[in-house]
Image 1 (cartoon, rainbow, N blue to C red):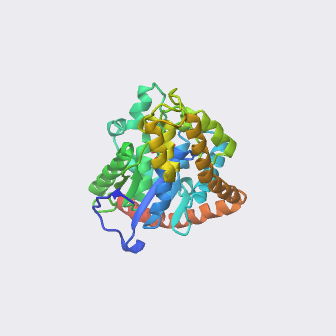
Image 2: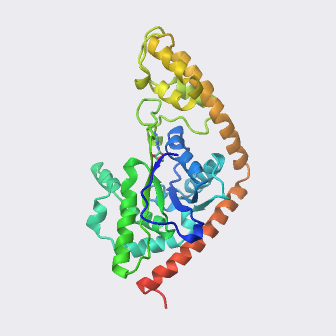
Amino acid sequence: MASRINLGYNSPNMTGGQKILLSGVKPTGRPHIGNYFGAMKQFVELQDQHKALIFIADLHAITTNQEATSLRQDTLDLAIDYLAIGLDPAKTILFRQSDILEHANLNWIFNCLTTVPYLQRAHAYKDALAKNQEVNVGTFDYPILMAADILMYDADLVPVGQDQKQHVEYARDTAEKFNRVYGGATFKLPEPLIIEGLKTIPGIDSQKMSKSKGNIIPLFAEDAEIKTQVMKIVTDSKTPEEPKDPATCNVFALHELFSQDQLPELRQRYEQGGIGYKESKEILIANLIKFIAPLREKRQAIAADPNKVKAILKAGGDEARKLAQAKMAVVREKVGLNW
Ligand code: AMP
């Protein structure tokens, strides 16, 4: 996998030479194919060469979701989604953030080192202000909770999109500040892992595919839903005979992901004329179903045994807690909170 990695650290012995990779995922409902190609798939590929920790960021989720039943369901669903796409609990520590009380504990210690003007520079806070949203303290403070999430486990690498590099910068600044104030090298400075060549997947309305815009093709969609959504993809009104530009066609953008084998032929037919959008969509539907149906079936099989999924999360939590408690023992000593 192509990746730009510029490490300032060697990985610790406890991981047998493997880098520690950490990522948090917010439980926010059904994932779509943009989430899959833009993020989820990468985690599964990266778990083979790294010591990976993936947590379900339920503490971050309650900044916006304050409905207990839906939070519980979304959390379980997200674990099922990840297991269905191939996250392997034997390789990856999968856990719930709130299961590790130390995250909130370290968040508080970092809060006491963080100034308000510094947090006011965070993109998400500035966006919320620009939209005149009333911002709760949790949302304002989320970069520092994120810093606690990352630094707790001595993460070397945090996979992020180009627009999310600021998250890792907050973690690095916080690590540096703690190390400076309390002396020593308690926290390792993490690096962003930027996956090259990731494209933004367009939704059926040609804007970025996004849960909030209602323009998604769900990753585990039923066949009927796939058909309905693809048929709704916005195109221009060219006739089948007219030449078409693959670079500006939303249907073709999805062919690039799902119709690899037919791509040269499809490109030629687009450029020369001779394929209508209806036919192009029908080919896409067939290929999407071929891709999604086995994933959906795997998901259904996993979802049939929620207790097993909960047991996986509990085991992941037990493993993560050991790491977190060991780290917090050092932190408490440094800060003067132990006796
Ligand atoms: P979100 O659901 O917006 O929180 O996104 C979760 C992850 O999926 C992030 O890493 C995004 O970069 C990625 N992602 C979301 N939507 C898209 C999209 N339309 N195309 C590519 N990646 C996406």
